Image (cartoon, rainbow, N blue to C red; front, side, top):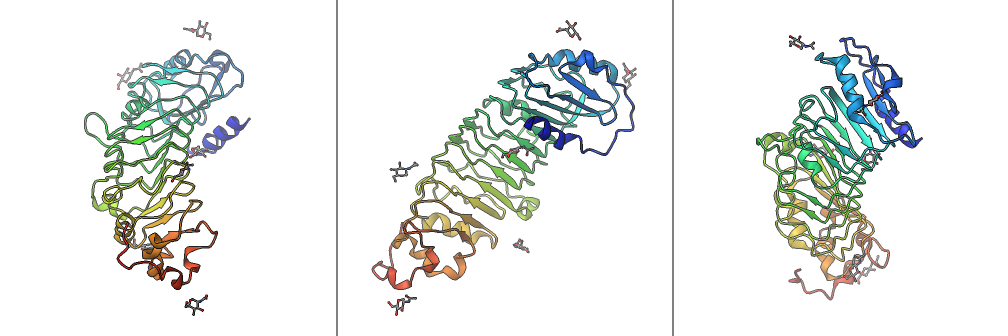
Length: 337
Ligand SMILES: *[C@@H]1O[C@H](CO)[C@@H](O)[C@H](O)[C@H]1NC(C)=O
Ligand SMILES: *[C@@H]1O[C@H](CO)[C@@H](O)[C@H](O)[C@H]1NC(C)=O
Ligand SMILES: *[C@@H]1O[C@H](CO)[C@@H](O)[C@H](O)[C@H]1NC(C)=O
Ligand SMILES: *[C@@H]1O[C@H](CO)[C@@H](O)[C@H](O)[C@H]1NC(C)=O
Ligand SMILES: *[C@@H]1O[C@H](CO)[C@@H](O)[C@H](O)[C@H]1NC(C)=O
Ligand SMILES: *[C@@H]1O[C@H](CO)[C@@H](O)[C@H](O)[C@H]1NC(C)=O
Protein backbone atom coordinates (compact mmCIF):
# COMPACT_ATOMS: atom_id res chain seq x y z
CA UNK A 1 0.00 0.00 0.00
CA UNK A 2 2.79 2.36 0.93
CA UNK A 3 4.63 1.60 -2.28
CA UNK A 4 1.52 2.08 -4.34
CA UNK A 5 0.95 5.48 -2.79
CA UNK A 6 4.55 6.47 -3.23
CA UNK A 7 4.71 5.44 -6.85
CA UNK A 8 1.38 7.03 -7.66
CA UNK A 9 2.55 10.25 -6.10
CA UNK A 10 5.65 10.16 -8.21
CA UNK A 11 4.13 9.23 -11.50
CA UNK A 12 0.41 9.62 -11.88
CA UNK A 13 0.42 13.33 -11.22
CA UNK A 14 2.07 13.79 -14.55
CA UNK A 15 0.10 15.98 -16.90
CA UNK A 16 2.37 16.30 -19.90
CA UNK A 17 1.36 13.70 -22.43
CA UNK A 18 3.61 12.69 -25.23
CA UNK A 19 2.33 13.65 -28.69
CA UNK A 20 3.57 10.36 -30.12
CA UNK A 21 0.80 7.80 -29.93
CA UNK A 22 1.29 4.21 -28.97
CA UNK A 23 -1.06 1.48 -27.81
CA UNK A 24 0.16 -0.51 -24.83
CA UNK A 25 -0.12 -4.30 -24.97
CA UNK A 26 -3.11 -5.61 -22.96
CA UNK A 27 -2.47 -5.76 -19.22
CA UNK A 28 -3.14 -9.54 -19.08
CA UNK A 29 0.10 -10.23 -20.91
CA UNK A 30 2.04 -7.77 -18.77
CA UNK A 31 1.17 -9.21 -15.35
CA UNK A 32 2.28 -8.22 -12.70
CA UNK A 33 2.73 -4.94 -14.52
CA UNK A 34 0.42 -2.68 -16.41
CA UNK A 35 0.99 -0.06 -19.00
CA UNK A 36 -0.90 3.15 -19.52
CA UNK A 37 -0.46 4.61 -22.97
CA UNK A 38 -2.19 7.91 -22.08
CA UNK A 39 0.49 8.94 -19.63
CA UNK A 40 3.23 6.54 -20.83
CA UNK A 41 3.63 4.80 -17.50
CA UNK A 42 4.66 1.20 -16.90
CA UNK A 43 3.81 0.18 -13.35
CA UNK A 44 4.51 -3.09 -11.59
CA UNK A 45 3.21 -2.97 -8.05
CA UNK A 46 1.04 -6.03 -7.51
CA UNK A 47 1.88 -7.13 -4.01
CA UNK A 48 2.87 -10.75 -3.42
CA UNK A 49 3.18 -11.23 -7.17
CA UNK A 50 5.48 -13.93 -8.44
CA UNK A 51 8.94 -12.98 -9.56
CA UNK A 52 8.60 -10.21 -12.08
CA UNK A 53 9.81 -11.27 -15.51
CA UNK A 54 10.79 -7.81 -16.52
CA UNK A 55 12.48 -8.84 -19.80
CA UNK A 56 9.29 -10.42 -21.00
CA UNK A 57 7.29 -7.33 -20.18
CA UNK A 58 9.66 -4.75 -21.60
CA UNK A 59 10.13 -6.74 -24.81
CA UNK A 60 6.37 -6.70 -25.38
CA UNK A 61 6.34 -2.97 -24.82
CA UNK A 62 9.38 -2.50 -27.05
CA UNK A 63 7.42 -4.19 -29.84
CA UNK A 64 4.60 -1.67 -29.72
CA UNK A 65 6.90 1.28 -29.24
CA UNK A 66 9.27 0.21 -32.03
CA UNK A 67 11.52 3.17 -32.36
CA UNK A 68 9.10 5.96 -31.60
CA UNK A 69 10.51 8.43 -29.12
CA UNK A 70 7.93 7.94 -26.37
CA UNK A 71 9.39 8.69 -22.95
CA UNK A 72 8.01 6.20 -20.45
CA UNK A 73 8.07 6.28 -16.71
CA UNK A 74 8.83 2.96 -15.08
CA UNK A 75 7.63 2.25 -11.54
CA UNK A 76 8.30 -1.11 -9.93
CA UNK A 77 7.49 -1.52 -6.27
CA UNK A 78 6.99 -4.47 -3.96
CA UNK A 79 7.20 -7.18 -6.61
CA UNK A 80 10.23 -9.44 -6.47
CA UNK A 81 13.03 -8.56 -8.85
CA UNK A 82 16.56 -9.59 -7.98
CA UNK A 83 18.55 -8.81 -11.07
CA UNK A 84 18.52 -6.36 -13.96
CA UNK A 85 20.34 -7.92 -16.92
CA UNK A 86 21.82 -6.11 -19.87
CA UNK A 87 18.58 -6.24 -21.89
CA UNK A 88 16.11 -6.20 -19.01
CA UNK A 89 14.69 -2.77 -19.78
CA UNK A 90 14.23 -3.49 -23.50
CA UNK A 91 14.57 -0.83 -26.16
CA UNK A 92 12.26 1.62 -24.44
CA UNK A 93 13.13 5.16 -23.38
CA UNK A 94 12.47 6.02 -19.74
CA UNK A 95 12.44 9.56 -18.41
CA UNK A 96 12.02 8.37 -14.82
CA UNK A 97 12.73 5.04 -13.23
CA UNK A 98 11.70 3.92 -9.74
CA UNK A 99 12.41 0.40 -8.54
CA UNK A 100 11.61 0.35 -4.84
CA UNK A 101 11.59 -2.41 -2.20
CA UNK A 102 12.02 -5.28 -4.67
CA UNK A 103 15.08 -7.08 -3.27
CA UNK A 104 17.09 -6.00 -6.33
CA UNK A 105 20.71 -7.08 -5.81
CA UNK A 106 22.55 -6.49 -9.04
CA UNK A 107 22.27 -4.29 -12.08
CA UNK A 108 24.18 -4.91 -15.28
CA UNK A 109 26.37 -1.96 -16.04
CA UNK A 110 24.86 -1.52 -19.52
CA UNK A 111 21.21 -1.93 -18.56
CA UNK A 112 20.54 1.78 -19.07
CA UNK A 113 22.49 2.23 -22.28
CA UNK A 114 19.44 2.45 -24.55
CA UNK A 115 17.75 5.09 -22.39
CA UNK A 116 20.93 6.80 -21.24
CA UNK A 117 20.32 10.23 -22.76
CA UNK A 118 16.72 10.47 -21.62
CA UNK A 119 16.61 9.34 -17.98
CA UNK A 120 16.83 12.20 -15.53
CA UNK A 121 15.37 10.65 -12.36
CA UNK A 122 16.22 7.36 -10.71
CA UNK A 123 14.92 6.04 -7.40
CA UNK A 124 16.28 2.65 -6.34
CA UNK A 125 15.62 2.90 -2.62
CA UNK A 126 14.96 -0.07 -0.36
CA UNK A 127 16.79 -2.75 -2.35
CA UNK A 128 19.95 -4.81 -1.72
CA UNK A 129 22.21 -2.94 -4.10
CA UNK A 130 25.98 -2.99 -3.64
CA UNK A 131 28.72 -0.61 -4.69
CA UNK A 132 28.67 -1.78 -8.33
CA UNK A 133 25.39 0.09 -8.85
CA UNK A 134 27.54 3.17 -9.51
CA UNK A 135 28.92 1.50 -12.65
CA UNK A 136 25.41 1.26 -14.08
CA UNK A 137 24.41 4.78 -13.03
CA UNK A 138 27.52 6.28 -14.59
CA UNK A 139 26.01 5.69 -18.04
CA UNK A 140 23.28 8.27 -17.40
CA UNK A 141 24.74 11.71 -18.20
CA UNK A 142 21.47 13.63 -17.85
CA UNK A 143 20.50 12.49 -14.35
CA UNK A 144 19.34 15.18 -11.96
CA UNK A 145 18.12 12.98 -9.06
CA UNK A 146 19.45 9.74 -7.57
CA UNK A 147 17.91 8.00 -4.57
CA UNK A 148 19.87 4.97 -3.35
CA UNK A 149 18.62 5.13 0.21
CA UNK A 150 18.16 1.90 2.16
CA UNK A 151 20.53 -0.33 0.20
CA UNK A 152 23.76 -2.21 1.01
CA UNK A 153 26.35 0.28 -0.20
CA UNK A 154 29.61 0.34 1.75
CA UNK A 155 31.95 2.54 -0.30
CA UNK A 156 31.32 5.55 -2.52
CA UNK A 157 33.94 5.04 -5.21
CA UNK A 158 36.30 7.67 -6.49
CA UNK A 159 34.64 9.72 -9.27
CA UNK A 160 31.41 7.88 -8.61
CA UNK A 161 29.48 10.19 -10.94
CA UNK A 162 31.80 10.25 -13.90
CA UNK A 163 31.43 8.09 -16.98
CA UNK A 164 34.43 6.08 -18.17
CA UNK A 165 34.54 8.37 -21.21
CA UNK A 166 35.22 11.24 -18.82
CA UNK A 167 31.77 12.82 -19.02
CA UNK A 168 30.44 13.97 -15.63
CA UNK A 169 26.82 13.79 -14.48
CA UNK A 170 26.94 17.53 -14.41
CA UNK A 171 23.17 18.06 -14.05
CA UNK A 172 22.89 16.14 -10.79
CA UNK A 173 21.11 18.11 -8.07
CA UNK A 174 20.13 15.54 -5.49
CA UNK A 175 22.04 12.46 -4.32
CA UNK A 176 20.41 10.48 -1.49
CA UNK A 177 22.44 7.69 0.08
CA UNK A 178 20.89 7.55 3.52
CA UNK A 179 20.54 4.26 5.47
CA UNK A 180 23.26 2.25 3.80
CA UNK A 181 26.40 0.78 5.41
CA UNK A 182 28.78 3.33 3.93
CA UNK A 183 32.06 3.48 5.83
CA UNK A 184 34.25 5.07 3.14
CA UNK A 185 33.88 8.02 0.81
CA UNK A 186 36.72 7.73 -1.67
CA UNK A 187 38.69 10.74 -2.88
CA UNK A 188 36.94 12.99 -5.41
CA UNK A 189 33.75 10.96 -5.10
CA UNK A 190 31.62 14.00 -6.01
CA UNK A 191 34.18 15.91 -8.04
CA UNK A 192 32.78 18.37 -10.58
CA UNK A 193 28.94 18.12 -10.18
CA UNK A 194 28.40 21.89 -10.45
CA UNK A 195 24.65 21.78 -9.68
CA UNK A 196 24.50 19.41 -6.76
CA UNK A 197 22.58 20.99 -3.88
CA UNK A 198 21.66 18.07 -1.67
CA UNK A 199 23.98 15.28 -0.63
CA UNK A 200 22.48 13.01 2.02
CA UNK A 201 24.81 10.39 3.53
CA UNK A 202 23.09 10.32 6.90
CA UNK A 203 22.52 7.07 8.83
CA UNK A 204 25.61 5.28 7.62
CA UNK A 205 28.80 3.91 9.20
CA UNK A 206 31.22 6.75 8.54
CA UNK A 207 33.86 7.29 11.16
CA UNK A 208 36.67 8.87 9.15
CA UNK A 209 36.35 11.24 6.21
CA UNK A 210 39.34 11.11 3.87
CA UNK A 211 41.27 14.19 2.76
CA UNK A 212 39.68 14.48 -0.65
CA UNK A 213 36.25 12.99 -0.11
CA UNK A 214 34.59 16.38 -0.57
CA UNK A 215 36.92 17.88 -3.13
CA UNK A 216 34.90 19.62 -5.82
CA UNK A 217 36.17 21.25 -8.95
CA UNK A 218 36.21 25.03 -8.62
CA UNK A 219 33.86 26.18 -11.37
CA UNK A 220 31.91 29.43 -11.59
CA UNK A 221 28.39 27.87 -11.65
CA UNK A 222 29.26 25.64 -8.70
CA UNK A 223 30.35 28.62 -6.58
CA UNK A 224 26.76 29.93 -6.69
CA UNK A 225 25.00 26.73 -5.66
CA UNK A 226 24.22 26.25 -1.98
CA UNK A 227 25.10 22.70 -1.03
CA UNK A 228 23.72 20.78 1.96
CA UNK A 229 25.87 17.84 3.08
CA UNK A 230 24.01 15.70 5.62
CA UNK A 231 26.24 13.38 7.66
CA UNK A 232 23.87 13.01 10.60
CA UNK A 233 23.70 9.69 12.46
CA UNK A 234 27.09 8.30 11.52
CA UNK A 235 30.01 7.42 13.79
CA UNK A 236 31.86 10.66 13.34
CA UNK A 237 33.88 12.20 16.16
CA UNK A 238 36.24 15.11 16.75
CA UNK A 239 39.09 13.44 14.82
CA UNK A 240 37.05 12.31 11.83
CA UNK A 241 37.89 15.42 9.82
CA UNK A 242 41.27 16.98 9.20
CA UNK A 243 42.40 20.37 7.85
CA UNK A 244 41.97 19.22 4.25
CA UNK A 245 38.56 17.56 4.49
CA UNK A 246 36.48 20.72 4.05
CA UNK A 247 39.05 22.86 2.28
CA UNK A 248 38.11 22.29 -1.36
CA UNK A 249 34.34 22.32 -1.62
CA UNK A 250 34.35 25.70 -3.38
CA UNK A 251 30.71 26.60 -2.77
CA UNK A 252 28.51 27.63 0.17
CA UNK A 253 27.85 24.63 2.41
CA UNK A 254 25.44 23.70 5.16
CA UNK A 255 27.15 20.83 6.92
CA UNK A 256 25.00 18.66 9.16
CA UNK A 257 26.77 16.42 11.66
CA UNK A 258 23.90 15.99 14.09
CA UNK A 259 23.72 12.82 16.20
CA UNK A 260 27.37 11.85 15.95
CA UNK A 261 30.07 11.63 18.60
CA UNK A 262 31.79 15.04 18.47
CA UNK A 263 33.11 16.25 21.81
CA UNK A 264 34.43 19.51 20.35
CA UNK A 265 34.93 21.31 17.06
CA UNK A 266 38.56 21.78 16.28
CA UNK A 267 39.42 25.40 15.49
CA UNK A 268 42.03 24.54 12.88
CA UNK A 269 39.44 22.61 10.84
CA UNK A 270 36.18 24.46 11.34
CA UNK A 271 37.29 28.08 11.60
CA UNK A 272 38.62 28.19 8.02
CA UNK A 273 35.52 26.35 6.84
CA UNK A 274 33.10 28.76 8.54
CA UNK A 275 35.01 31.79 7.26
CA UNK A 276 35.22 30.53 3.73
CA UNK A 277 31.72 31.67 2.77
CA UNK A 278 29.29 33.94 4.59
CA UNK A 279 26.59 31.26 4.34
CA UNK A 280 28.65 28.30 5.48
CA UNK A 281 27.20 26.71 8.58
CA UNK A 282 27.39 23.57 10.64
CA UNK A 283 24.60 21.89 12.59
CA UNK A 284 25.94 19.97 15.60
CA UNK A 285 22.71 18.98 17.30
CA UNK A 286 22.79 15.93 19.60
CA UNK A 287 26.54 15.49 20.01
CA UNK A 288 28.24 15.02 23.41
CA UNK A 289 29.94 18.43 23.23
CA UNK A 290 32.19 19.54 26.05
CA UNK A 291 32.03 23.27 26.42
CA UNK A 292 35.48 23.59 27.91
CA UNK A 293 38.52 25.47 26.67
CA UNK A 294 38.20 23.68 23.32
CA UNK A 295 35.05 25.77 22.71
CA UNK A 296 36.57 29.10 23.70
CA UNK A 297 37.36 30.07 20.11
CA UNK A 298 33.64 29.86 19.29
CA UNK A 299 32.46 31.53 22.46
CA UNK A 300 34.93 34.39 22.19
CA UNK A 301 33.55 35.31 18.76
CA UNK A 302 29.99 34.26 19.27
CA UNK A 303 28.75 37.32 17.37
CA UNK A 304 30.17 35.59 14.28
CA UNK A 305 29.54 31.97 15.13
CA UNK A 306 26.13 31.85 16.74
CA UNK A 307 24.47 32.02 13.32
CA UNK A 308 26.91 29.58 11.80
CA UNK A 309 27.24 26.90 14.44
CA UNK A 310 23.72 25.68 15.05
CA UNK A 311 22.38 23.75 18.04
CA UNK A 312 25.66 23.80 19.97
CA UNK A 313 24.21 22.32 23.15
CA UNK A 314 26.79 21.32 25.73
CA UNK A 315 26.89 18.18 27.85
CA UNK A 316 25.27 20.10 30.71
CA UNK A 317 22.32 20.91 28.40
CA UNK A 318 23.18 24.59 28.21
CA UNK A 319 23.68 26.18 24.84
CA UNK A 320 27.27 27.37 24.37
CA UNK A 321 26.21 30.97 23.75
CA UNK A 322 24.59 31.14 27.19
CA UNK A 323 27.89 30.52 28.97
CA UNK A 324 29.34 33.47 30.83
CA UNK A 325 32.72 34.44 29.51
CA UNK A 326 34.09 34.16 33.03
CA UNK A 327 33.55 30.41 32.85
CA UNK A 328 36.46 30.29 30.41
CA UNK A 329 38.79 32.30 32.69
CA UNK A 330 40.98 29.31 33.35
CA UNK A 331 41.72 28.79 29.70
CA UNK A 332 45.14 29.76 28.52
CA UNK A 333 44.56 32.06 25.54
CA UNK A 334 47.07 30.14 23.49
CA UNK A 335 45.02 26.96 23.89
CA UNK A 336 44.84 25.15 20.59
CA UNK A 337 43.45 21.85 19.42
C1 LIG B 1 6.32 -14.30 -21.36
O1 LIG B 1 4.98 -14.21 -20.95
C2 LIG B 1 4.09 -15.07 -21.64
C3 LIG B 1 2.70 -14.82 -21.13
O2 LIG B 1 2.35 -13.49 -21.31
C4 LIG B 1 4.50 -16.52 -21.44
O3 LIG B 1 3.65 -17.35 -22.21
C5 LIG B 1 5.94 -16.70 -21.85
O4 LIG B 1 6.36 -18.01 -21.53
C6 LIG B 1 6.83 -15.71 -21.15
N1 LIG B 1 8.17 -15.82 -21.62
C7 LIG B 1 9.20 -15.96 -20.81
C8 LIG B 1 10.54 -16.02 -21.46
O5 LIG B 1 9.08 -16.02 -19.61
C1 LIG C 1 13.04 3.00 -37.03
O1 LIG C 1 13.38 4.28 -37.53
C2 LIG C 1 14.02 4.27 -38.76
C3 LIG C 1 14.37 5.71 -39.12
O2 LIG C 1 14.89 6.34 -38.02
C4 LIG C 1 13.09 3.68 -39.81
O3 LIG C 1 13.75 3.62 -41.08
C5 LIG C 1 12.69 2.29 -39.41
O4 LIG C 1 11.74 1.78 -40.30
C6 LIG C 1 12.10 2.29 -38.00
N1 LIG C 1 11.87 0.94 -37.56
C7 LIG C 1 10.68 0.53 -37.14
C8 LIG C 1 10.60 -0.89 -36.73
O5 LIG C 1 9.72 1.28 -37.05
C1 LIG D 1 14.33 9.04 -1.29
O1 LIG D 1 15.09 8.93 -0.12
C2 LIG D 1 14.59 9.54 1.03
C3 LIG D 1 15.56 9.35 2.12
O2 LIG D 1 16.68 10.12 1.89
C4 LIG D 1 13.23 9.02 1.36
O3 LIG D 1 12.74 9.59 2.54
C5 LIG D 1 12.34 9.33 0.18
O4 LIG D 1 11.04 8.91 0.42
C6 LIG D 1 12.91 8.69 -1.05
N1 LIG D 1 12.02 8.79 -2.20
C7 LIG D 1 11.64 9.91 -2.78
C8 LIG D 1 10.70 9.75 -3.91
O5 LIG D 1 12.04 11.00 -2.44
C1 LIG E 1 31.82 8.03 21.42
O1 LIG E 1 33.21 8.20 21.78
C2 LIG E 1 33.56 7.63 23.01
C3 LIG E 1 35.02 7.94 23.26
O2 LIG E 1 35.33 9.23 22.92
C4 LIG E 1 33.34 6.14 22.98
O3 LIG E 1 33.60 5.59 24.22
C5 LIG E 1 31.87 5.86 22.60
O4 LIG E 1 31.68 4.48 22.43
C6 LIG E 1 31.50 6.56 21.32
N1 LIG E 1 30.10 6.40 21.05
C7 LIG E 1 29.64 6.01 19.88
C8 LIG E 1 28.15 5.89 19.77
O5 LIG E 1 30.35 5.76 18.92
C1 LIG F 1 23.58 34.01 1.71
O1 LIG F 1 22.22 33.64 1.87
C2 LIG F 1 21.31 34.70 1.75
C3 LIG F 1 19.93 34.21 2.12
O2 LIG F 1 19.69 32.95 1.57
C4 LIG F 1 21.39 35.28 0.35
O3 LIG F 1 20.50 36.35 0.21
C5 LIG F 1 22.81 35.73 0.09
O4 LIG F 1 22.94 36.19 -1.23
C6 LIG F 1 23.80 34.61 0.35
N1 LIG F 1 25.15 35.11 0.21
C7 LIG F 1 25.98 34.75 -0.75
C8 LIG F 1 27.32 35.39 -0.76
O5 LIG F 1 25.67 33.90 -1.58
C1 LIG G 1 29.35 36.82 34.32
O1 LIG G 1 30.55 36.87 35.09
C2 LIG G 1 30.85 38.17 35.63
C3 LIG G 1 32.23 38.16 36.24
O2 LIG G 1 32.56 36.88 36.74
C4 LIG G 1 29.77 38.55 36.60
O3 LIG G 1 30.03 39.85 37.13
C5 LIG G 1 28.43 38.56 35.89
O4 LIG G 1 27.39 38.82 36.79
C6 LIG G 1 28.16 37.21 35.21
N1 LIG G 1 26.96 37.33 34.39
C7 LIG G 1 25.99 36.46 34.47
C8 LIG G 1 24.81 36.71 33.58
O5 LIG G 1 25.99 35.49 35.22
